[in-house]
Image 1: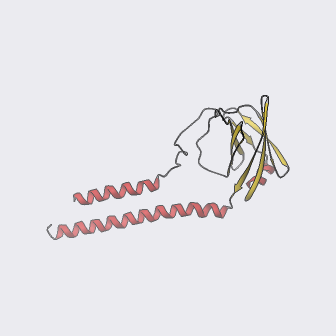
Image 2: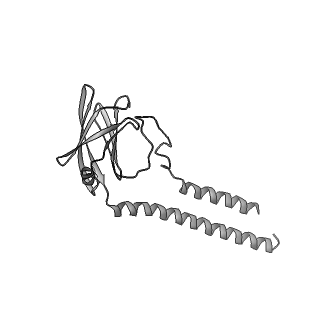
Image 3: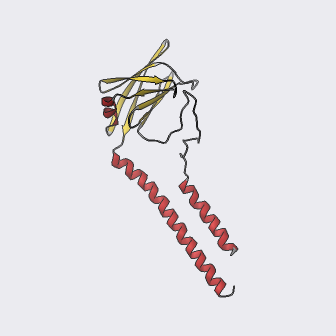
Amino acid sequence: MKMLTKFLVVAMLSTSTALAGPGAHGPNGEHLDAPGSQHAQVDTGPRIETFTESFELVGQVEADQFSIMIDRYETNEPVLGGKLEVEVNGAKASAKFHADHGDYVVNDVQFLKMIAAPGKHGLVFTLTAGDESDLLEGTLDVKAVDDVHSHSSGYTGWIVAGGLLAAVLIALAIRRVRRQSSNGN
């Protein structure tokens, strides 16, 4: 019976890592709520990351907005209260600064439709922060919905397969223990 207990513990521990993989709370598990801090988020949409000698920028397209975080490159200090404009294919949109989250947000519906369409979008960000100004360029790669679903369902398939394998191994172990106990061992 001790063998069965050990086997069950090992089986449970080996399947639990598949169910709680990295990224459950963000890349480093942090929960940051301060304005201007980088928020741990589940990837809900396409992301863009770019930098210059002075600034670094991370943006994420969400259902109803394009959220952008900007930091100073050398110090990682958030750039708060600046002026930001985003351009794609000649169309421009101003980003509003949200002091409560420390991010810049574009919520222009037409602009969001353009950058949310599948494909690669070259974006130019014009930032003015106090006496400084800079241009940041980057490419936003938006995957088609089918590509996103096929990627996530593959991961789910591995979790299900691991669970089924564990169940089969547990059933075999129980069967073996019952045979041994019925034989008098």
